[in-house]
Structure formats: C-alpha cells, structure tokens
Length: 188
Image (cartoon, rainbow, N blue to C red):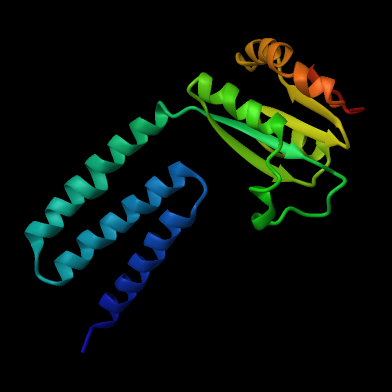
C-alpha cells in the first residue's frame, strides 16, 4: 500500500506537469517545471534513491531552470492586441480562418526583426485594452478601418511606421483604411 505522502506527491507532480504544458506564459512554464523537478527529487528520496534525488535537484531544479530563464531573457516577445468591438466573442476554431492581411503583415514585420508576435484577440474596448493589458501595439478594427496604436517609448514603432507606409499600399487600394497612431488619449 502506498503511503499518503507519496500519493499526494504523485498528484502534485501530475498537476505541475499539466500546468507547465498548458500555461501561455513561458516564464511560468519554467517555474512549474522547476517545482515539478523539485517534487520529483523529493519522490526519489521517498523511494530510497538519494543519488537520483540529488542529481534531479541539482540538474533538473537548479541548472536547467537557470538555463531556461537566461534563455528567456533573450526571448523577444511583441504583444499585439487585436480588438474588434463589433464582435461578441472570438472562438478558438475561428481564429485561424479569420487571420487577416493586416495581422499577417504585422507578423512578417515581427519575424523580420527577430520578434515573436503574440497576438491576443479581444472584444474589449480600446480603452480597456490600453489601461488593463501589457501591449506593444493594438490593432483596432471597425469595418474596413484598421487603426494601429503604438507608444513612442516602443523603439520598434518608427520602424513599423516605415513598414506600414511601404507594405500596406495594396490594402489601401482595396478600400482598407489603415492608420498608425503613436500615443493615445482617453477620447480614442
């Protein structure tokens, strides 16, 4: 019969393994993996394998976590919020079909700058997104009008302005209105 502590540890390991795979934040995933690894080391001690526990604690919990976190320091994410207040919701199944030319070009801009574009779809208002979320740019759609908002402090915004001027003319000819706004006010 398995002791209660072992059962609790096995359940905790399963939970932390699941959380590390399911979390959308990479830093959280690394922390969950570190806790998983420390829990594994404790289970090895309970099972009478102190040498494996020591190796897991040193390599899995410590060295691997430090390597992952230092690699994430070099990871450059570019958070793009895409808001369309006319929609009631975004379903996961529709997101891949609804990728539009504006977002594709923003992703191309990001990949050209070695940035990872994190696109967040929302039906929140522009003001809610600006106040409540961390963002690099916001793309607001109203029918055929796309307003792209960026902050002056973002050192990619001038490059993006040039990119939009050079690469969005064909969309403008198709009837799309595309504007880049640097900074924002409560009246937007």
